[in-house]
Image (cartoon, rainbow, N blue to C red; front, side):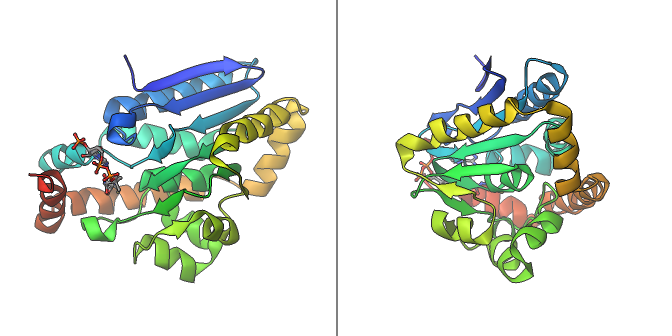
Length: 248
Ligand code: COA
């Protein structure tokens, strides 16, 4: 069974990360399934909006660190990762996310591509790239400063400090904070509402608000080159091994 569940109902395609026992850490197969789901939703006329969800307590713990170790050996980032990041940057239908709990690494940076984000008070957003001897990804080095200003973006992407839900809302990448029980119904209602709007008008309006994705795509590639080089570094390998060994 895949750890990505895709359902379509009422004009909304829901992509749920469901690997709760690993806090929804993303494997190559999961990235590919999410990229395929977004692409499928884009071409299905029955879908008017995308909704991304995790599981109670965990939106996503980010890239699977065991996979990082494999990438460190091959020196590649893996095409499913890039396929997902490019899909995020180029979808034309609105993207809504519901976050309840941990959002780490790409669990946070994917939200910068979303149009509306709903989160519970216990949600935490954190990108420990530098602590893992890595660099930011998913175009976050370009988008985060635009959303929250360079100082807060530095705090998140370079200092790796956590943002709690209220601060994430203040920083501008969470639209509203609601109780844990209300996260999914609220996010779903927002997505369903968007799906009912005149499609072409919404597509054009969204494009005007978000701008041309070419610069984001270019930054995703630029970050990926630096990321690949960092993956092969001794300090990154040591950080991954330390995570894997922490319970031993
Ligand atoms: N990659 C691989 N496995 C991960 C993971 C990740 N990114 N995040 C969590 N897991 C696994 C843990 O190894 C553990 O597996 P196990 O039960 O087989 O030992 C399981 O998920 C539960 O995680 P655990 O650490 O026991 O839960 P916790 O509540 O104490 O801590 C986190 C949760 C997310 C804070 C912690 O697991 C963590 O820091 N993960 C790494 C996050 C990260 O750095 N991601 C990459 C960002 S670029």
